[in-house]
Image (cartoon, rainbow over all chains, first blue to last red):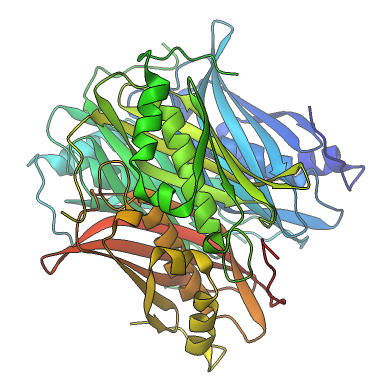
Length: 153
Length: 153
Length: 153
Length: 153
Protein backbone atom coordinates (compact mmCIF):
# COMPACT_ATOMS: atom_id res chain seq x y z
CA UNK A 1 0.00 0.00 0.00
CA UNK A 2 3.01 2.28 0.52
CA UNK A 3 6.49 2.38 -0.98
CA UNK A 4 8.00 4.48 1.76
CA UNK A 5 10.58 3.42 4.32
CA UNK A 6 9.97 4.90 7.77
CA UNK A 7 12.98 6.60 9.39
CA UNK A 8 11.65 5.93 12.85
CA UNK A 9 10.95 2.26 13.69
CA UNK A 10 8.61 3.51 16.42
CA UNK A 11 6.62 5.63 13.99
CA UNK A 12 3.23 4.09 14.78
CA UNK A 13 3.60 4.66 18.53
CA UNK A 14 4.87 8.20 17.94
CA UNK A 15 1.92 9.03 15.69
CA UNK A 16 -0.59 7.57 18.12
CA UNK A 17 0.94 9.45 21.06
CA UNK A 18 0.80 12.74 19.17
CA UNK A 19 -2.78 12.13 18.06
CA UNK A 20 -3.76 11.37 21.66
CA UNK A 21 -2.52 14.82 22.69
CA UNK A 22 -4.84 16.60 20.25
CA UNK A 23 -7.68 18.00 22.33
CA UNK A 24 -9.65 18.81 19.17
CA UNK A 25 -9.72 15.21 17.93
CA UNK A 26 -10.78 13.97 21.36
CA UNK A 27 -13.50 16.60 21.71
CA UNK A 28 -14.95 15.61 18.35
CA UNK A 29 -14.79 11.86 19.00
CA UNK A 30 -12.47 11.18 16.07
CA UNK A 31 -10.48 7.96 16.23
CA UNK A 32 -7.17 7.03 14.66
CA UNK A 33 -7.96 3.63 13.16
CA UNK A 34 -4.81 2.89 11.17
CA UNK A 35 -1.28 4.14 10.67
CA UNK A 36 1.31 2.78 8.25
CA UNK A 37 4.49 4.12 6.66
CA UNK A 38 3.16 7.14 4.81
CA UNK A 39 -0.51 6.42 5.49
CA UNK A 40 -3.05 7.20 8.19
CA UNK A 41 -6.81 6.69 8.55
CA UNK A 42 -9.24 8.42 10.91
CA UNK A 43 -12.92 7.74 11.54
CA UNK A 44 -15.86 9.41 13.23
CA UNK A 45 -19.35 8.13 13.90
CA UNK A 46 -22.25 10.41 12.98
CA UNK A 47 -23.18 12.67 15.88
CA UNK A 48 -24.98 15.97 16.30
CA UNK A 49 -21.71 17.65 17.29
CA UNK A 50 -20.36 17.04 13.80
CA UNK A 51 -23.12 18.67 11.75
CA UNK A 52 -23.55 21.71 9.54
CA UNK A 53 -26.82 23.63 9.16
CA UNK A 54 -28.57 20.89 7.16
CA UNK A 55 -27.61 18.05 9.46
CA UNK A 56 -24.88 16.55 7.26
CA UNK A 57 -21.29 16.08 8.34
CA UNK A 58 -19.85 19.61 8.40
CA UNK A 59 -17.43 20.43 5.59
CA UNK A 60 -15.11 22.06 8.06
CA UNK A 61 -15.08 18.82 10.08
CA UNK A 62 -14.26 16.88 6.93
CA UNK A 63 -11.46 19.37 6.26
CA UNK A 64 -10.21 18.92 9.83
CA UNK A 65 -10.14 15.11 9.56
CA UNK A 66 -8.46 15.24 6.16
CA UNK A 67 -5.85 17.66 7.49
CA UNK A 68 -5.07 15.30 10.38
CA UNK A 69 -5.07 12.16 8.24
CA UNK A 70 -2.64 13.72 5.77
CA UNK A 71 -0.58 15.25 8.56
CA UNK A 72 -0.09 11.98 10.41
CA UNK A 73 0.62 10.13 7.17
CA UNK A 74 3.45 12.65 6.71
CA UNK A 75 4.59 12.42 10.33
CA UNK A 76 4.93 8.63 10.07
CA UNK A 77 7.89 9.15 7.71
CA UNK A 78 9.70 11.82 9.73
CA UNK A 79 12.81 11.07 11.80
CA UNK A 80 12.82 10.70 15.61
CA UNK A 81 12.92 13.95 17.59
CA UNK A 82 10.77 15.90 15.15
CA UNK A 83 7.26 17.23 15.04
CA UNK A 84 4.93 18.01 12.13
CA UNK A 85 2.99 21.15 11.27
CA UNK A 86 0.61 21.76 8.39
CA UNK A 87 1.73 24.79 6.38
CA UNK A 88 -1.29 24.78 4.05
CA UNK A 89 -4.09 22.56 2.85
CA UNK A 90 -6.83 22.62 0.29
CA UNK A 91 -10.05 20.63 0.27
CA UNK A 92 -12.47 20.05 -2.60
CA UNK A 93 -15.91 18.71 -1.73
CA UNK A 94 -17.45 16.35 -4.27
CA UNK A 95 -20.63 15.00 -2.63
CA UNK A 96 -22.97 15.71 0.26
CA UNK A 97 -21.62 14.00 3.37
CA UNK A 98 -24.48 11.81 4.55
CA UNK A 99 -23.91 8.56 6.36
CA UNK A 100 -23.24 6.69 9.57
CA UNK A 101 -19.50 7.15 9.50
CA UNK A 102 -16.94 9.49 8.08
CA UNK A 103 -13.56 8.07 7.11
CA UNK A 104 -10.46 10.09 6.18
CA UNK A 105 -7.51 8.30 4.56
CA UNK A 106 -4.24 10.19 4.19
CA UNK A 107 -1.29 9.22 2.01
CA UNK A 108 2.09 10.83 1.40
CA UNK A 109 2.74 11.86 -2.20
CA UNK A 110 6.32 13.02 -1.68
CA UNK A 111 8.22 12.99 1.61
CA UNK A 112 10.92 15.61 2.05
CA UNK A 113 13.52 16.65 4.60
CA UNK A 114 11.79 20.00 5.11
CA UNK A 115 8.45 19.82 3.25
CA UNK A 116 6.23 16.82 2.64
CA UNK A 117 3.27 16.81 0.25
CA UNK A 118 0.31 14.61 1.16
CA UNK A 119 -3.17 13.89 -0.10
CA UNK A 120 -6.24 12.47 1.64
CA UNK A 121 -9.71 11.31 0.71
CA UNK A 122 -12.86 11.43 2.82
CA UNK A 123 -15.62 8.84 2.47
CA UNK A 124 -19.09 8.57 3.96
CA UNK A 125 -20.17 5.07 4.84
CA UNK A 126 -23.91 4.37 4.60
CA UNK A 127 -25.40 0.90 4.74
CA UNK A 128 -21.89 -0.47 4.24
CA UNK A 129 -21.27 1.52 1.06
CA UNK A 130 -18.52 4.13 0.95
CA UNK A 131 -18.93 7.28 -1.14
CA UNK A 132 -16.10 9.70 -1.82
CA UNK A 133 -17.08 13.10 -0.45
CA UNK A 134 -13.90 15.20 -0.38
CA UNK A 135 -10.25 15.32 -1.46
CA UNK A 136 -7.33 17.14 0.17
CA UNK A 137 -3.93 18.34 -1.09
CA UNK A 138 -1.54 19.53 1.61
CA UNK A 139 1.96 20.68 2.59
CA UNK A 140 3.59 19.78 5.89
CA UNK A 141 6.79 20.93 7.50
CA UNK A 142 9.11 18.88 9.72
CA UNK A 143 10.32 20.81 12.76
CA UNK A 144 12.41 19.91 15.81
CA UNK A 145 10.26 18.47 18.60
CA UNK A 146 9.69 20.82 21.51
CA UNK A 147 8.11 20.62 24.89
CA UNK A 148 4.35 20.74 24.58
CA UNK A 149 2.99 24.26 24.92
CA UNK A 150 -0.46 25.21 25.96
CA UNK A 151 -3.01 27.75 24.85
CA UNK A 152 -4.39 27.78 28.40
CA UNK A 153 -1.63 27.52 30.96
CA UNK B 1 -16.34 48.07 5.34
CA UNK B 2 -18.21 46.42 2.44
CA UNK B 3 -19.40 47.64 -0.95
CA UNK B 4 -22.00 44.92 -1.38
CA UNK B 5 -25.75 45.32 -1.40
CA UNK B 6 -27.56 42.44 0.35
CA UNK B 7 -30.40 40.83 -1.63
CA UNK B 8 -32.13 39.73 1.52
CA UNK B 9 -32.97 42.49 4.01
CA UNK B 10 -33.16 39.80 6.69
CA UNK B 11 -29.65 38.56 5.91
CA UNK B 12 -28.28 38.96 9.42
CA UNK B 13 -31.12 36.97 11.00
CA UNK B 14 -30.86 34.30 8.29
CA UNK B 15 -27.12 33.93 8.82
CA UNK B 16 -27.49 33.73 12.61
CA UNK B 17 -30.27 31.14 12.34
CA UNK B 18 -28.18 28.97 10.02
CA UNK B 19 -25.11 29.28 12.25
CA UNK B 20 -27.21 28.28 15.26
CA UNK B 21 -28.13 25.01 13.50
CA UNK B 22 -24.47 24.00 13.08
CA UNK B 23 -23.83 21.36 15.70
CA UNK B 24 -20.07 21.55 15.06
CA UNK B 25 -19.83 25.26 15.91
CA UNK B 26 -21.86 24.73 19.09
CA UNK B 27 -19.78 21.72 20.15
CA UNK B 28 -16.58 23.71 19.77
CA UNK B 29 -17.89 26.80 21.56
CA UNK B 30 -17.43 29.06 18.54
CA UNK B 31 -19.49 32.26 18.53
CA UNK B 32 -20.72 34.37 15.65
CA UNK B 33 -19.78 37.87 16.80
CA UNK B 34 -20.57 39.95 13.74
CA UNK B 35 -22.31 39.73 10.39
CA UNK B 36 -22.56 42.45 7.75
CA UNK B 37 -23.27 42.54 4.01
CA UNK B 38 -20.44 40.37 2.71
CA UNK B 39 -18.64 40.01 6.03
CA UNK B 40 -18.75 37.70 9.04
CA UNK B 41 -16.61 37.28 12.16
CA UNK B 42 -16.37 34.29 14.51
CA UNK B 43 -14.52 33.94 17.78
CA UNK B 44 -13.47 31.18 20.15
CA UNK B 45 -11.89 31.37 23.58
CA UNK B 46 -8.86 29.17 24.21
CA UNK B 47 -9.89 25.76 25.55
CA UNK B 48 -8.36 22.30 25.72
CA UNK B 49 -10.94 21.01 23.22
CA UNK B 50 -9.41 23.27 20.55
CA UNK B 51 -5.79 22.14 20.75
CA UNK B 52 -3.31 20.28 18.59
CA UNK B 53 -0.49 18.11 19.93
CA UNK B 54 1.58 21.04 21.23
CA UNK B 55 -1.28 22.80 22.99
CA UNK B 56 -1.80 25.56 20.41
CA UNK B 57 -5.05 26.22 18.62
CA UNK B 58 -5.36 23.32 16.15
CA UNK B 59 -4.77 24.26 12.49
CA UNK B 60 -7.81 22.23 11.51
CA UNK B 61 -9.89 24.27 13.95
CA UNK B 62 -8.54 27.46 12.41
CA UNK B 63 -9.43 26.07 8.98
CA UNK B 64 -12.93 25.23 10.25
CA UNK B 65 -13.52 28.73 11.64
CA UNK B 66 -12.15 30.37 8.48
CA UNK B 67 -14.38 28.16 6.33
CA UNK B 68 -17.43 29.21 8.35
CA UNK B 69 -16.49 32.89 8.47
CA UNK B 70 -16.03 33.00 4.69
CA UNK B 71 -19.12 30.89 4.11
CA UNK B 72 -21.41 33.10 6.15
CA UNK B 73 -19.89 36.23 4.60
CA UNK B 74 -20.96 34.74 1.26
CA UNK B 75 -24.38 33.64 2.54
CA UNK B 76 -25.14 37.20 3.70
CA UNK B 77 -25.31 38.28 0.05
CA UNK B 78 -27.46 35.42 -1.24
CA UNK B 79 -31.16 35.84 -2.03
CA UNK B 80 -33.98 34.57 0.22
CA UNK B 81 -34.85 30.89 -0.13
CA UNK B 82 -31.28 29.75 -0.72
CA UNK B 83 -28.61 27.93 1.20
CA UNK B 84 -24.83 27.99 0.95
CA UNK B 85 -22.30 25.18 0.58
CA UNK B 86 -18.52 25.37 0.45
CA UNK B 87 -17.23 23.73 -2.73
CA UNK B 88 -13.55 24.13 -1.83
CA UNK B 89 -11.25 26.06 0.47
CA UNK B 90 -7.58 26.55 1.00
CA UNK B 91 -5.80 27.69 4.14
CA UNK B 92 -2.22 28.93 4.55
CA UNK B 93 -0.84 29.10 8.06
CA UNK B 94 1.56 31.96 8.74
CA UNK B 95 2.23 31.87 12.51
CA UNK B 96 1.84 29.58 15.51
CA UNK B 97 -1.63 30.07 16.96
CA UNK B 98 -1.01 30.98 20.60
CA UNK B 99 -3.32 33.23 22.54
CA UNK B 100 -6.45 33.69 24.59
CA UNK B 101 -8.80 34.03 21.68
CA UNK B 102 -9.00 33.02 18.06
CA UNK B 103 -10.83 35.35 15.66
CA UNK B 104 -11.82 34.53 12.07
CA UNK B 105 -12.96 37.36 9.80
CA UNK B 106 -14.50 36.48 6.44
CA UNK B 107 -15.07 38.81 3.51
CA UNK B 108 -16.57 38.29 0.05
CA UNK B 109 -14.20 38.99 -2.84
CA UNK B 110 -16.74 38.43 -5.60
CA UNK B 111 -20.38 37.46 -5.15
CA UNK B 112 -22.00 35.46 -7.94
CA UNK B 113 -25.34 33.98 -8.83
CA UNK B 114 -23.91 30.46 -8.69
CA UNK B 115 -20.40 30.74 -7.25
CA UNK B 116 -19.06 33.24 -4.72
CA UNK B 117 -15.37 33.67 -3.91
CA UNK B 118 -14.48 34.68 -0.36
CA UNK B 119 -11.40 35.18 1.75
CA UNK B 120 -10.89 35.12 5.52
CA UNK B 121 -8.14 35.86 7.99
CA UNK B 122 -7.54 34.28 11.40
CA UNK B 123 -5.96 36.20 14.27
CA UNK B 124 -4.79 35.14 17.70
CA UNK B 125 -5.38 37.67 20.43
CA UNK B 126 -2.88 37.68 23.30
CA UNK B 127 -2.66 40.42 25.90
CA UNK B 128 -4.88 42.52 23.66
CA UNK B 129 -2.61 42.19 20.62
CA UNK B 130 -3.85 40.44 17.48
CA UNK B 131 -1.46 38.44 15.32
CA UNK B 132 -2.37 37.12 11.88
CA UNK B 133 -2.06 33.34 11.95
CA UNK B 134 -3.82 32.05 8.81
CA UNK B 135 -5.43 33.10 5.53
CA UNK B 136 -8.20 31.36 3.56
CA UNK B 137 -9.32 31.48 -0.09
CA UNK B 138 -12.62 29.74 -0.80
CA UNK B 139 -15.45 29.00 -3.27
CA UNK B 140 -19.09 28.75 -2.24
CA UNK B 141 -22.16 27.68 -4.16
CA UNK B 142 -25.68 29.03 -3.77
CA UNK B 143 -28.32 26.27 -3.76
CA UNK B 144 -32.08 26.22 -3.20
CA UNK B 145 -32.96 25.95 0.48
CA UNK B 146 -34.21 22.53 1.53
CA UNK B 147 -35.64 21.01 4.61
CA UNK B 148 -32.90 20.32 7.12
CA UNK B 149 -31.55 16.79 6.81
CA UNK B 150 -29.82 14.84 9.52
CA UNK B 151 -26.88 12.52 9.67
CA UNK B 152 -28.55 10.80 12.63
CA UNK B 153 -32.30 10.60 12.10
CA UNK C 1 -8.38 3.58 -17.09
CA UNK C 2 -11.63 5.51 -16.54
CA UNK C 3 -15.05 4.52 -15.28
CA UNK C 4 -16.87 7.46 -16.81
CA UNK C 5 -19.38 7.38 -19.64
CA UNK C 6 -19.05 10.33 -22.04
CA UNK C 7 -22.25 12.24 -22.80
CA UNK C 8 -20.95 13.35 -26.16
CA UNK C 9 -19.87 10.56 -28.52
CA UNK C 10 -17.74 13.15 -30.35
CA UNK C 11 -15.93 14.15 -27.15
CA UNK C 12 -12.43 13.51 -28.47
CA UNK C 13 -12.95 15.67 -31.56
CA UNK C 14 -14.60 18.40 -29.48
CA UNK C 15 -11.70 18.46 -27.00
CA UNK C 16 -9.10 18.54 -29.77
CA UNK C 17 -10.91 21.36 -31.59
CA UNK C 18 -11.10 23.44 -28.41
CA UNK C 19 -7.44 22.79 -27.59
CA UNK C 20 -6.47 23.86 -31.12
CA UNK C 21 -8.12 27.25 -30.53
CA UNK C 22 -5.95 27.98 -27.49
CA UNK C 23 -3.34 30.47 -28.64
CA UNK C 24 -1.39 29.99 -25.42
CA UNK C 25 -0.89 26.24 -25.92
CA UNK C 26 0.21 26.80 -29.53
CA UNK C 27 2.61 29.60 -28.57
CA UNK C 28 4.25 27.36 -25.98
CA UNK C 29 4.49 24.32 -28.26
CA UNK C 30 2.35 22.15 -26.01
CA UNK C 31 0.73 19.12 -27.64
CA UNK C 32 -2.41 17.23 -26.74
CA UNK C 33 -1.21 13.64 -26.92
CA UNK C 34 -4.19 11.73 -25.56
CA UNK C 35 -7.83 12.22 -24.66
CA UNK C 36 -10.20 9.61 -23.19
CA UNK C 37 -13.48 9.73 -21.25
CA UNK C 38 -12.42 11.72 -18.19
CA UNK C 39 -8.72 11.80 -19.03
CA UNK C 40 -6.36 14.00 -21.03
CA UNK C 41 -2.56 14.13 -21.46
CA UNK C 42 -0.41 17.01 -22.73
CA UNK C 43 3.29 17.09 -23.49
CA UNK C 44 5.98 19.67 -24.17
CA UNK C 45 9.59 19.21 -25.25
CA UNK C 46 12.23 21.15 -23.32
CA UNK C 47 12.82 24.58 -24.87
CA UNK C 48 14.24 27.89 -23.71
CA UNK C 49 10.77 29.47 -23.93
CA UNK C 50 9.59 27.19 -21.11
CA UNK C 51 12.22 28.03 -18.48
CA UNK C 52 12.37 29.75 -15.13
CA UNK C 53 15.42 31.64 -13.84
CA UNK C 54 17.51 28.50 -13.24
CA UNK C 55 16.81 26.93 -16.62
CA UNK C 56 14.32 24.31 -15.38
CA UNK C 57 10.76 23.98 -16.65
CA UNK C 58 8.95 26.98 -15.15
CA UNK C 59 6.54 26.14 -12.35
CA UNK C 60 3.97 28.43 -13.89
CA UNK C 61 4.26 26.47 -17.14
CA UNK C 62 3.73 23.25 -15.22
CA UNK C 63 0.69 24.84 -13.58
CA UNK C 64 -0.60 25.91 -17.00
CA UNK C 65 -0.24 22.42 -18.47
CA UNK C 66 -1.83 20.80 -15.43
CA UNK C 67 -4.73 23.26 -15.59
CA UNK C 68 -5.30 22.38 -19.26
CA UNK C 69 -4.90 18.64 -18.77
CA UNK C 70 -7.43 18.64 -15.93
CA UNK C 71 -9.72 21.01 -17.79
CA UNK C 72 -9.90 18.91 -20.93
CA UNK C 73 -10.29 15.73 -18.88
CA UNK C 74 -13.39 17.43 -17.41
CA UNK C 75 -14.59 18.75 -20.78
CA UNK C 76 -14.51 15.22 -22.27
CA UNK C 77 -17.44 14.30 -20.00
CA UNK C 78 -19.59 17.37 -20.66
CA UNK C 79 -22.65 17.28 -22.92
CA UNK C 80 -22.74 18.70 -26.48
CA UNK C 81 -23.27 22.44 -26.77
CA UNK C 82 -21.26 23.30 -23.66
CA UNK C 83 -17.91 24.84 -22.87
CA UNK C 84 -15.60 24.47 -19.88
CA UNK C 85 -13.99 27.08 -17.63
CA UNK C 86 -11.62 26.58 -14.71
CA UNK C 87 -13.01 28.22 -11.59
CA UNK C 88 -9.94 27.49 -9.43
CA UNK C 89 -6.90 25.31 -9.30
CA UNK C 90 -4.10 24.49 -6.90
CA UNK C 91 -0.68 23.10 -7.70
CA UNK C 92 1.88 21.55 -5.33
CA UNK C 93 5.40 21.14 -6.62
CA UNK C 94 7.26 18.08 -5.39
CA UNK C 95 10.53 17.96 -7.37
CA UNK C 96 12.70 20.18 -9.58
CA UNK C 97 11.46 19.91 -13.15
CA UNK C 98 14.52 18.82 -15.10
CA UNK C 99 14.27 16.69 -18.21
CA UNK C 100 13.73 16.42 -21.95
CA UNK C 101 9.98 16.39 -21.79
CA UNK C 102 7.19 17.54 -19.51
CA UNK C 103 4.01 15.46 -19.38
CA UNK C 104 0.74 16.49 -17.71
CA UNK C 105 -1.94 13.84 -17.16
CA UNK C 106 -5.40 14.98 -16.09
CA UNK C 107 -8.17 12.81 -14.65
CA UNK C 108 -11.69 13.57 -13.45
CA UNK C 109 -12.35 12.78 -9.80
CA UNK C 110 -16.06 13.66 -9.84
CA UNK C 111 -18.04 14.90 -12.83
CA UNK C 112 -21.01 17.12 -12.12
CA UNK C 113 -23.77 18.90 -14.00
CA UNK C 114 -22.43 22.28 -12.88
CA UNK C 115 -19.07 21.66 -11.22
CA UNK C 116 -16.50 18.98 -11.98
CA UNK C 117 -13.49 18.22 -9.77
CA UNK C 118 -10.33 17.02 -11.50
CA UNK C 119 -6.76 16.19 -10.60
CA UNK C 120 -3.60 16.07 -12.71
CA UNK C 121 0.01 15.01 -12.31
CA UNK C 122 3.07 16.41 -14.06
CA UNK C 123 6.10 14.26 -14.83
CA UNK C 124 9.54 15.10 -16.19
CA UNK C 125 10.99 12.52 -18.53
CA UNK C 126 14.78 12.22 -18.53
CA UNK C 127 16.66 9.37 -20.21
CA UNK C 128 13.35 7.54 -20.48
CA UNK C 129 12.58 7.79 -16.75
CA UNK C 130 9.55 9.74 -15.54
CA UNK C 131 9.66 11.63 -12.24
CA UNK C 132 6.61 13.16 -10.60
CA UNK C 133 7.17 16.90 -10.27
CA UNK C 134 3.76 18.43 -9.48
CA UNK C 135 0.16 17.64 -8.55
CA UNK C 136 -3.01 19.66 -9.26
CA UNK C 137 -6.48 19.77 -7.68
CA UNK C 138 -9.04 21.78 -9.62
CA UNK C 139 -12.68 22.84 -10.07
CA UNK C 140 -14.29 23.36 -13.48
CA UNK C 141 -17.65 24.75 -14.47
CA UNK C 142 -19.79 23.68 -17.41
CA UNK C 143 -21.29 26.65 -19.30
CA UNK C 144 -23.35 26.96 -22.48
CA UNK C 145 -21.13 27.19 -25.58
CA UNK C 146 -20.91 30.66 -27.07
CA UNK C 147 -19.40 32.16 -30.17
CA UNK C 148 -15.67 32.56 -29.75
CA UNK C 149 -14.74 35.99 -28.43
CA UNK C 150 -11.44 37.69 -28.83
CA UNK C 151 -9.19 39.75 -26.62
CA UNK C 152 -7.91 41.50 -29.74
CA UNK C 153 -10.73 42.19 -32.20
CA UNK D 1 2.38 50.35 0.38
CA UNK D 2 4.49 47.80 2.26
CA UNK D 3 5.64 47.47 5.83
CA UNK D 4 8.53 45.17 5.08
CA UNK D 5 12.21 45.93 5.36
CA UNK D 6 14.28 44.37 2.56
CA UNK D 7 17.33 42.37 3.68
CA UNK D 8 19.11 43.03 0.41
CA UNK D 9 19.56 46.70 -0.53
CA UNK D 10 19.97 45.56 -4.14
CA UNK D 11 16.65 43.70 -4.09
CA UNK D 12 15.15 45.48 -7.09
CA UNK D 13 18.15 44.75 -9.32
CA UNK D 14 18.27 41.15 -8.11
CA UNK D 15 14.57 40.63 -8.86
CA UNK D 16 14.86 42.20 -12.31
CA UNK D 17 17.91 40.10 -13.17
CA UNK D 18 16.14 36.90 -12.13
CA UNK D 19 13.00 37.84 -14.07
CA UNK D 20 15.11 38.56 -17.15
CA UNK D 21 16.45 34.98 -17.05
CA UNK D 22 12.93 33.48 -17.23
CA UNK D 23 12.50 32.26 -20.79
CA UNK D 24 8.78 31.72 -20.21
CA UNK D 25 8.09 35.35 -19.30
CA UNK D 26 10.08 36.56 -22.32
CA UNK D 27 8.33 34.15 -24.70
CA UNK D 28 4.94 35.37 -23.51
CA UNK D 29 5.84 39.07 -23.68
CA UNK D 30 5.23 39.65 -19.99
CA UNK D 31 6.91 42.70 -18.47
CA UNK D 32 7.98 43.40 -14.92
CA UNK D 33 6.62 46.91 -14.38
CA UNK D 34 7.25 47.46 -10.70
CA UNK D 35 9.10 45.95 -7.77
CA UNK D 36 9.11 47.18 -4.18
CA UNK D 37 9.90 45.65 -0.77
CA UNK D 38 7.39 42.80 -0.68
CA UNK D 39 5.54 43.80 -3.85
CA UNK D 40 5.84 43.13 -7.57
CA UNK D 41 3.67 43.94 -10.60
CA UNK D 42 3.71 42.32 -14.04
CA UNK D 43 1.81 43.28 -17.18
CA UNK D 44 1.01 41.79 -20.57
CA UNK D 45 -0.69 43.35 -23.59
CA UNK D 46 -3.47 41.34 -25.23
CA UNK D 47 -2.08 39.05 -27.92
CA UNK D 48 -3.24 35.90 -29.69
CA UNK D 49 -0.45 33.91 -27.97
CA UNK D 50 -2.14 34.54 -24.61
CA UNK D 51 -5.63 33.22 -25.40
CA UNK D 52 -7.81 30.32 -24.37
CA UNK D 53 -10.40 28.69 -26.64
CA UNK D 54 -12.84 31.65 -26.52
CA UNK D 55 -10.24 34.33 -27.23
CA UNK D 56 -9.97 35.65 -23.65
CA UNK D 57 -6.76 35.77 -21.66
CA UNK D 58 -6.06 32.13 -20.77
CA UNK D 59 -6.66 31.24 -17.12
CA UNK D 60 -3.38 29.34 -17.07
CA UNK D 61 -1.61 32.49 -18.27
CA UNK D 62 -3.26 34.45 -15.48
CA UNK D 63 -2.12 31.77 -13.04
CA UNK D 64 1.41 31.99 -14.44
CA UNK D 65 1.55 35.77 -14.07
CA UNK D 66 0.11 35.64 -10.57
CA UNK D 67 2.63 32.97 -9.58
CA UNK D 68 5.49 35.16 -10.83
CA UNK D 69 4.15 38.36 -9.29
CA UNK D 70 3.77 36.69 -5.90
CA UNK D 71 7.08 34.91 -6.26
CA UNK D 72 9.07 38.05 -7.00
CA UNK D 73 7.24 39.94 -4.26
CA UNK D 74 8.57 37.24 -1.92
CA UNK D 75 12.05 37.22 -3.45
CA UNK D 76 12.38 40.99 -2.87
CA UNK D 77 12.51 40.30 0.88
CA UNK D 78 14.99 37.42 0.80
CA UNK D 79 18.66 37.86 1.79
CA UNK D 80 21.55 38.08 -0.70
CA UNK D 81 22.84 34.77 -2.04
CA UNK D 82 19.43 33.08 -2.12
CA UNK D 83 16.95 32.03 -4.75
CA UNK D 84 13.17 31.56 -4.60
CA UNK D 85 10.98 28.62 -5.59
CA UNK D 86 7.21 28.31 -5.50
CA UNK D 87 6.19 25.29 -3.44
CA UNK D 88 2.47 25.63 -4.15
CA UNK D 89 -0.08 28.12 -5.38
CA UNK D 90 -3.83 28.38 -5.74
CA UNK D 91 -5.79 30.62 -8.08
CA UNK D 92 -9.49 31.50 -7.96
CA UNK D 93 -10.99 33.08 -11.06
CA UNK D 94 -13.71 35.65 -10.45
CA UNK D 95 -14.47 37.21 -13.87
CA UNK D 96 -13.90 36.56 -17.56
CA UNK D 97 -10.54 38.06 -18.54
CA UNK D 98 -11.37 40.42 -21.37
CA UNK D 99 -9.37 43.58 -22.03
CA UNK D 100 -6.36 45.25 -23.60
CA UNK D 101 -3.98 44.49 -20.79
CA UNK D 102 -3.57 42.00 -17.98
CA UNK D 103 -1.96 43.17 -14.75
CA UNK D 104 -0.78 40.93 -11.89
CA UNK D 105 0.09 42.53 -8.55
CA UNK D 106 1.82 40.40 -5.92
CA UNK D 107 2.21 41.19 -2.25
CA UNK D 108 3.83 39.34 0.65
CA UNK D 109 1.48 38.39 3.48
CA UNK D 110 4.14 36.92 5.77
CA UNK D 111 7.84 36.68 5.02
CA UNK D 112 9.74 33.83 6.64
CA UNK D 113 13.28 32.49 6.86
CA UNK D 114 12.23 29.28 5.11
CA UNK D 115 8.68 29.79 3.85
CA UNK D 116 7.01 32.99 2.69
CA UNK D 117 3.26 33.33 2.06
CA UNK D 118 2.17 35.72 -0.67
CA UNK D 119 -1.00 36.78 -2.42
CA UNK D 120 -1.60 38.37 -5.81
CA UNK D 121 -4.48 39.85 -7.76
CA UNK D 122 -5.00 39.93 -11.52
CA UNK D 123 -6.86 42.74 -13.23
CA UNK D 124 -8.00 43.23 -16.83
CA UNK D 125 -7.76 46.78 -18.10
CA UNK D 126 -10.34 47.79 -20.72
CA UNK D 127 -10.94 51.38 -21.81
CA UNK D 128 -8.91 52.48 -18.81
CA UNK D 129 -11.03 50.55 -16.30
CA UNK D 130 -9.52 47.72 -14.25
CA UNK D 131 -11.60 44.69 -13.30
CA UNK D 132 -10.45 42.07 -10.81
CA UNK D 133 -10.34 38.72 -12.58
CA UNK D 134 -8.36 36.36 -10.32
CA UNK D 135 -6.78 35.99 -6.88
CA UNK D 136 -3.79 33.87 -5.83
CA UNK D 137 -2.60 32.45 -2.49
CA UNK D 138 0.89 30.96 -2.55
CA UNK D 139 3.85 29.50 -0.61
CA UNK D 140 7.47 30.15 -1.55
CA UNK D 141 10.69 28.68 -0.25
CA UNK D 142 14.02 30.43 0.12
CA UNK D 143 16.94 28.30 -1.08
CA UNK D 144 20.67 28.94 -1.49
CA UNK D 145 21.48 30.45 -4.89
CA UNK D 146 23.09 28.04 -7.31
CA UNK D 147 24.63 28.28 -10.74
CA UNK D 148 21.89 28.49 -13.32
CA UNK D 149 20.94 25.08 -14.69
CA UNK D 150 19.37 24.41 -18.02
CA UNK D 151 16.70 22.11 -19.32
CA UNK D 152 18.45 22.17 -22.70
CA UNK D 153 22.21 22.30 -22.33
